[in-house]
Amino acid sequence: MTDRAEPIEKSLFEAPPMAEQERMAEAILFASAEPVTVAELAARMPHGCDPAEALAHLRRRYVGRGVNLVRVGDAWAMRTAADLGHLMRKETVEQRKLSRAAIETLAIVAYHQPVTRAEIEEIRGVAVSRGTIDQLMELDWIRLGRRRMTPGRPVTFVVTEHFLDHFGLESARDLPGVKELRAAGLLDNRPLPGAMQKPDEEDDETSAGQSELFED
Image (cartoon, rainbow, N blue to C red; front, side, top):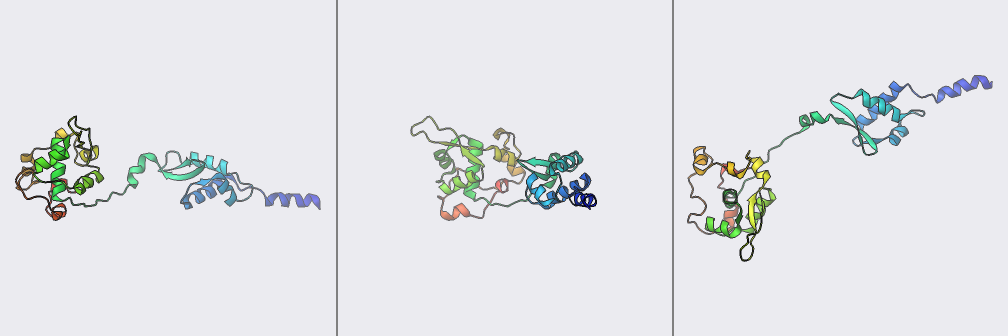
C-alpha cells in the first residue's frame, strides 16, 4: 500500500514544465500594472514552480524583441524596447495665448539680453507688471541672469534654452530681424516696443491682440 501511494503523492506536487512556467510568469507580468517581484510570482504560481528560473528563460526569449523583460529594483516588468520608446509618445499641442505686454517683453529680452527690468520699461515706454515677468518665467522662456555691477545691483533677464529650442534657434544670435519677421507675416505694422503709447492697464496684460511669433 505504501509503495503504491508514493507515486501518487509525488505527482500531486510535481512542478509544471519550465515552458509552462514561463507562460504563467509571462501572463502575470503582462496583466500587472506594476512590476512584480519573484516572491509575488511564487505566491501566484503552482507549488513547486521556480519563478526565478522562469524569468531567466523569459528574459532571454524577449532579447531583441519589441518588448523586453526588465528588472525594476527588486521586481520585474515587461517594457517597450528602449530604442522603440519614441513610438509610444503621444504629443499634444496646447495653445497658450500671450498678452501683448508679454510678447513685447519677451522680444525685448530676446533681442537685448541681458536686460534689466528698468531697461525693459525704458524700451517699452511703460511699466512692466510682475505678472508679465512671472508668466514668461513660468513658461521657462526667460530666466534670471547675472546682476549688473551698478548701484543697486539689479538682476538681468535672458532667454532660456527652452525658448531657443521652441523656436528652433541655436542661439539668440539666430533671431531674425524685424524686416524679416514682417516679410514673413509674423509681425504686423504696430509700433515697435519703445514707441509712444499709453501706460499699461490691467486689461493690457490680457488683451487679445497677439503676434503669431510668440504664440504657443
